[in-house]
Image (cartoon, rainbow, N blue to C red; front, side, top):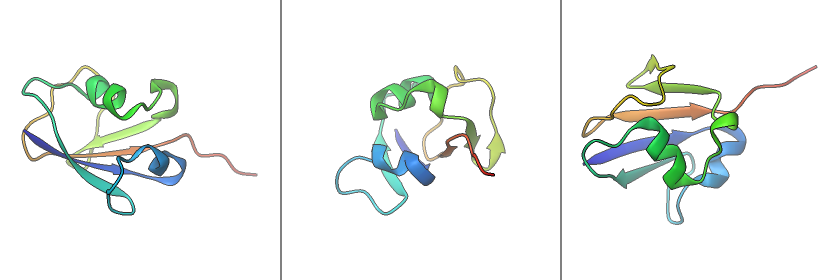
Length: 80
C-alpha cells in the first residue's frame, strides 16, 4: 500500500532521499501502524508530537494505516 508522509519543521530531515521538500510517497505493507511508519523513517516517538491521518488528529500510534492515506507529523513547538 502507498502512504503519503508529510513532515514539518525539524522532522523534514527524516524524509527519504529523493523526496519532495516536505513529503514523500512510501510503500508499506498492509497492516502497517503509525508506530511502524515512525520506526521505518527513524523518527523517535518522543519527537513525533502531533500526528494527523487524513487531516484528523490521531493519538493512537497503533492505528493501522490505509492505502492512500496522508500522514502529517509535527515535532514539539517551542518559542519564547
